[in-house]
Length: 88
Image (cartoon, rainbow, N blue to C red; front, top):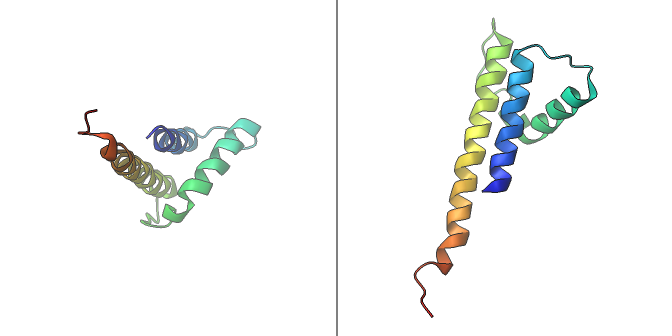
């Protein structure tokens, strides 16, 4: 769950940096955008807003962040489940 939360945090941070027009030539901002694009790139053109490209990226990468949280939660519950209910 921690890994999924960190990935979602990376994606949300990239969304915020893009929405506030952070300097894309800054190495930290560029690294955050590249990392988020690696993990959320498949969601980039899921929904398009022709007149508002920032809104499209915000919605699509937001969907990616939520998906990572949901899938991470499901996987962590499946991993934790075999140990539940056993008393020694």
